[in-house]
Length: 243
Image 1 (cartoon, one colour):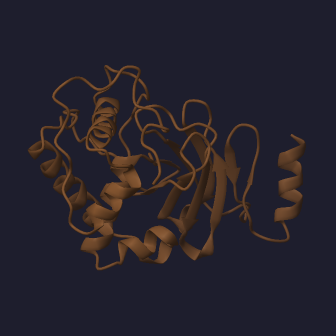
Image 2 (cartoon, rainbow, N blue to C red):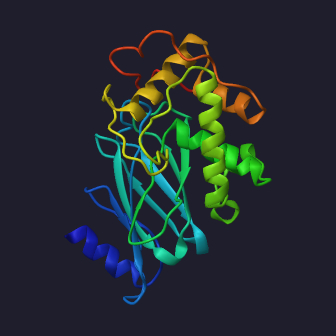
């Protein structure tokens, strides 16, 4: 299409990111270079729609795209630039709130979900790697990303902490917050139900998600899981409001 043609024309001179109406961002690279398509879902229970997705990858490669009405986004980056950190903001998220994630696999197709759970996994992995998580969240960079081993350990630690507070961790084999499939606003989806339960717990504890993140970075624990099913309709981005 015309937008793609213009991107190709401009990008022969300089490396940058372009996106079209299909929520797909691409970075031009030499014909012989391998490319990776990053696909993910941004959600807080409900899908995060119309949000900006900023990718910070190795080698100074950056890309930007947007989520569609179901929270899905796509972006193409040079495979050699992996891993990439993702930051989602705007759209149906409250002003001032940002969620993060990081790629943990390589290849021609990579899954990268972004939600409060991936945000907290990344924070815990950054801290375990000796990185100042609070500073990193203000300015995400690809040069200090934790290893896949650190991410896996952080995910396991989060599972232990959440189940101890009464939350139900998905029992799907090899469940991974960053790469496992999720269907936003679907009560029968165990992943979606966990996000809904977290959102409901924050509301019950009279705390916003950004406030909880500050507490979590300082060693704070999760609020107890709701004793009743999550609110209906599912928790929305505005329910998990910014401070």
